[in-house]
Length: 90
Image (tube, rainbow, N blue to C red; front, top):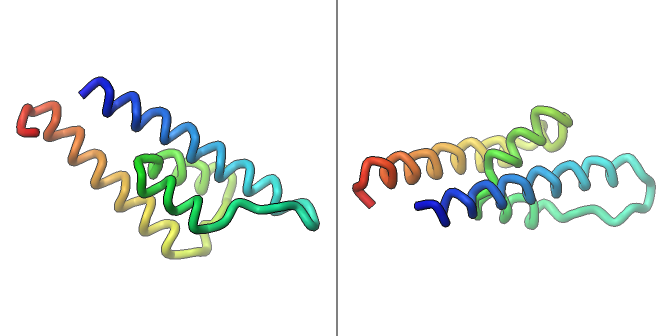
């Protein structure tokens, strides 16, 4: 349980930073961007909360419905997993 929560916190921080870096690079002409696949993959692998927070705070990728969907679904899925881990069902 503790390891899983640590994993989620680390993934959240990494994903938040990836979204932020991509946002900053989007402002620079010719800068190498982080691909949408990478951003979505990190959100799916546990960083959905970080991705969603970065989307809201930095207004990044908010016009892409699939980013909103993936991040919200990820938050719901990982919240349910943590809930059942706390309850002792997993």
